[in-house]
Amino acid sequence: SNIKIEVVKNKEEGGKVAYRLIKEAMEEGAEVFGLATGSTPEMLYKELRESDLDFSDKIAVNLDEYIGLEADHPQSYEHFMKEQLFNDKPFKETHIPDGLATEEDENERYDEILEKNPIDVQILGIGTNAHIGFNEPGTPFDTKTHKIKLTEDTIQANKRYFESEDEVPDYAYSMGIASIMAAKKIILMAYGKNKAEAIEKTVNGPVSEDVPASILQKHPDVVIIVDEEAASQL
Ligand code: GLP
Image (cartoon, rainbow, N blue to C red; front, side, top):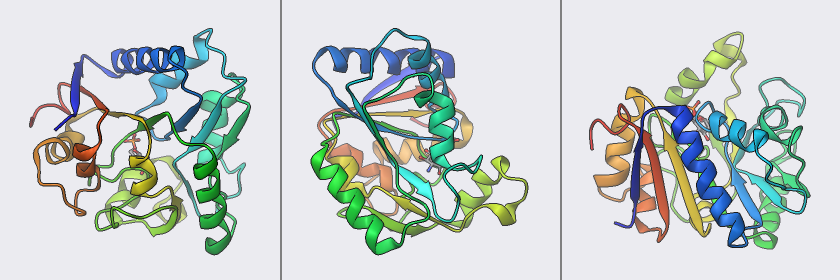
């Protein structure tokens, strides 16, 4: 496949590698950035916050949002993005699914945003079950923005941020796999032993809807940044 693997020492170094790729893409004219949440991209956002890169004429389009949380809920992805990046680095426009909108309205609204703003660089983390965005295993590869029922795996993995498991939303809106694959360049980061199996299947396994990230084997420009633990099964 076309996937390029960069093994780094740790998250800090991974953040720097991803930062450099973003900087290069900007020098080549990238204007629309597909952004991700989770602990994985935090060091990248720190690099961006502390950089002198100017995003005031750039556009950010985020992957996903929990359904049912107010935008200012401390665990909403909108809140996360403000804290991690947007408060310090203003963009011309930032887009994120609206977790309080109805499914019908939101799918259409977000697909229009994506059509109008083709993504130049997409940042991705990965779930332990190889989900990307919130596209859980079994999601058809041709999906656009849609509502997803989170798997038990994902709820367990994400509950650490909430006061109790009951508070983790059961549903989310996510950009679909087709929308992610439409990005010109994709940078996926993964750190730690619990991502090793997902990375192995993503890179070497058959391309299968059971392993959402495996579709990246079919994308022409993917860089996967991993630490040694996440690379340990490659
Ligand atoms: C969530 C997000 C994903 C993210 C994943 C992994 O499910 N929707 O975009 O990649 O968590 O999170 P972390 O980076 O904290 O391991």
